[in-house]
Length: 456
Image (cartoon, rainbow, N blue to C red; front, top):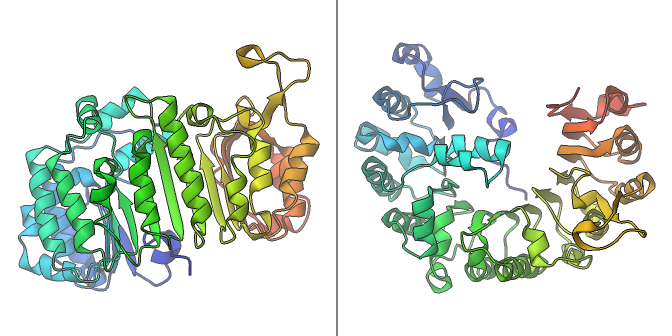
């Protein structure tokens, strides 16, 4: 059975006030008017001024935020899922962790999600290699952060039913990253690993922070979660051995999301080793239903991938959801990938950032030279249409930031051929017009079209 994301809108809104997303900038007086609602809330997500720019600065050290969060949690005895930006940990949250009432409420916790919201948004906007990311860094050695995490870890010692643990997927500043490369693991990381070890019998889905992968494969082998079904991993290219060891000890994974970043000492052999691990472990994952890959710029080029490298997808008989993002591979690799996918069984497909100016939709012209001076041509329309013909059971299709790769003809063909399609997500598709999106028949009512950013 597919595990729904615990903070997905469809999950939260199935019952009235089952879940609530609450703005920490609300005055405390407002809480008095909704405390009768909070008594039955199970899913709580704390946000800062929703609807404003994702890039704005927020002072997460404001003590009023901590008091507000404490006031909410003291009124939610049925809370089982908690989501809050980890940057709140930069202030003194003792009013939360030292409250016997809140600690009693959190004993029922089944899911904890601590994202670094600003960083996640910045990555989506600018990519993982942009220097602007430094403005979103979080110092895991900050005394308040370390103290808060230590207190949180003690609270979680009394949560016997914790099934979902998502810790921030952060990128630290240069000095911290260099320490990670030298295997100088920050002390806070020990607490991360302890959490996974303490709850290994109950955890079903986890998101593992970047620096945890710096432990040796032998050390990671001490964390075996027999019921683990969903893993989100952000890794540097130089931890292929550790990732392979972890995946080998968790063969029953049903969902894998993996973001691969370049290490500071990145070289070609690292890319080759990491790509081999991804191929080998995914092909051996008999239960894997969901595979999302986001690869560092130039990763596929340095890994030496060729037209046979996607063949491991053919043997993934359980695969229903595939996503590929930030992809730059060999010329013509888009055709190899789509041909290798198990088309008849896929229900969700996302091909993001696949513009025609990139190699995904291009191949070498017969007239054309080799290497950097090679003349390239776009994959013909007829070839594209044939590649999309076999996805008869697809329910959701995403083309985000596909630039010139998708046009009206392709979309119209998809509408006609994919009879099960329910949702189409497109953005920044500059060849796509309202003519293509309008549809030609019953698909006008059948297909929901979303994420139209960047469309004229």
